[in-house]
Length: 242
Image (cartoon, rainbow, N blue to C red; front, side):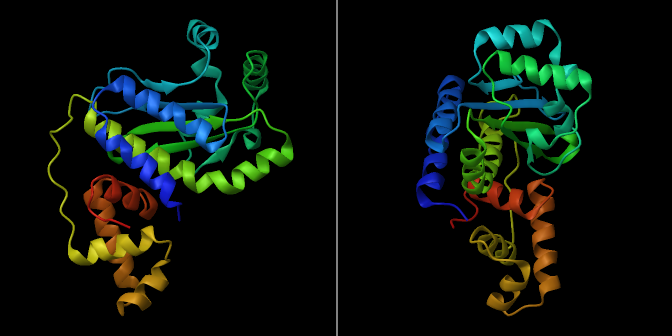
């Protein structure tokens, strides 16, 4: 599913204990992945009060000043899409009204490419965050970048969000230990290795519906909505070691 170097790089977050280093580390990932900009923001977290919703962002201060002074969040199609989507989306594919089109054009005036991708991150109780990346690339370069980067950025997004929520929120350290059964851990381990439920059933010599049952239970215990997020969180919490 991921190269060992990427996974090892992201797990370095476990050693970081201050927010500035955390933010700086995230911004170095954009260079490693070949993007010009990286943003990690939290828009809704009812269970914990975050200190700053814009946790890591490589955009120039001039753009950020304009964005917030003009209240651009209300005409930002990227944010609007994050509120509805559960899967990654490409900016160019979003349907935009005239106001949103004008906003995207204004962003380009500040040097922000129209070629970008956002990973919405959802957790229990309507928790919402997002990771966005973009690159000033031609069509062929962008397609090549997407072919490699979608699963990698998706892993990074979920892992970084869980690391942030565990370390740097007011509820940090207050979470109860997550306890999965041996079978639940097995199913997530094989999921992390890229196996489908049907393949896992054959490996473990159990019914496919039983695999689905165990992964569903693991998702509930981990407070996530899907098998991919469950896998990432299990890795982040050192429950499995793929």
